[in-house]
Length: 109
Image (cartoon, rainbow, N blue to C red):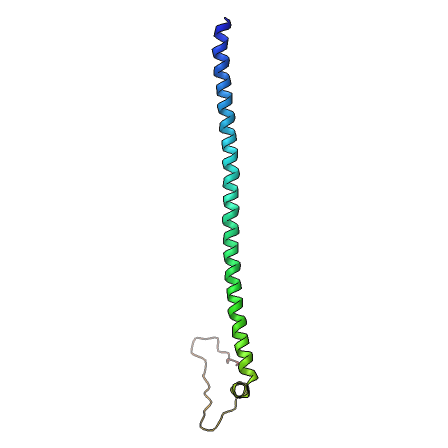
């Protein structure tokens, strides 16, 4: 009878060991999948931030270019004329009326 219990105990031990191994592999896989998901999320966020930075750098460069233009009197005069609606000799001021179907409000410069 002692010999019959030994193979049964061995089989039960192997089943328990296999179950534990499967459990450990499953838990490690879940943690690995979570880490990959977090990495993908961080990469997407980083890409978005880099895009925002590039956009802000372009905007800053445009603003610097406009500041350089406005510091020069020859660059400031057209801006003043546009804002005051003044014209130089041999120039004409053109007003554009709203198109049909628009909100009907006059556009303000």
